[in-house]
Image 1 (tube, one colour):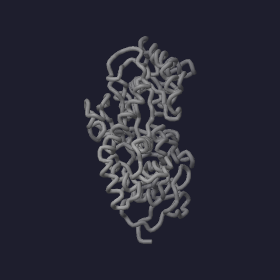
Image 2: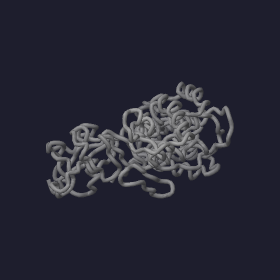
Image 3: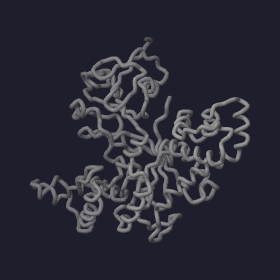
Image 4: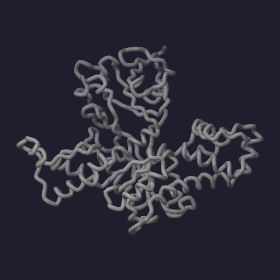
Length: 417
């Protein structure tokens, strides 16, 4: 069965990786709770538009895992804390070997970068450091690791390639499989390069191009520019925005998100995660609610901190950016939410529908260009499928592609066709 997508978080010490991971996995408001799978793996929550809003049944949407509020659904997604990023990781420095070994399992990376420039390359406190160096440095470590492993045995690889009359995809996949690659990933890499010469005639420069293109394909990366509330962040953000694809960058303040969620959980504020909306007791009283929403009174220190946070982060950037980090990772992977149900007319899942009116209990994330058959294997395993129904009870062919709003509500009827 295809495994679930895995998002790896990387970042040098003190860049805010742990805070970002904690803010992504803080499931205090999520039904189903927060699960730590092992010390390095955890469940985060990706915000999506739920199918319940499409059909006007949001009030009956009760997910088995995560939550759904007014059609905004939090879907569990697995995160990997990739520790040990230091200069020279590909040479085994620090926890380099473990860092790269862990990293290979990820489908996409979130690189948490200290946009304030107040930590140097090794995570030590400083001022005026250029964080754009960290972005280039992570990529160079991955490229050097893959290139080093490939180039040291390139002569043997070429001889075998000629002897067995293999295709370039077959030969490279044999070398890249250890990085969690597939033949499709290698094929896309070579298609983008459009190389004319056969593999046995590739120069070292061509191998460099292949490794760089493979790194882009296998490890698409979101750059999470953290600590945007620091006064030194602006000039660094402006510089990085000119150097990187703007579509890969998300501005965030993980520590702000953690603080807001903590205050909301303790009953001091009303906070809509992923938005700029924060209300205090005083705000709600001013809006005409004499009870202030039942919120507690803030002390002067926390009241000032929240007002500063509104001005420096929320009103300026639209949110703390934390939810957008995961959304961007899902976007670059092209993840599609699919809602398996028992009944494609009522969207319920239980055997006793009259007793259980809850809709869209389950949601799974699949990669772009997945077919109905791919989804069936992911959900049903090897169970024989007689036929598949889509929304409204219409039968759906197994070779059809699932996309948002099309073939994304499915019922699998077990049996022999």
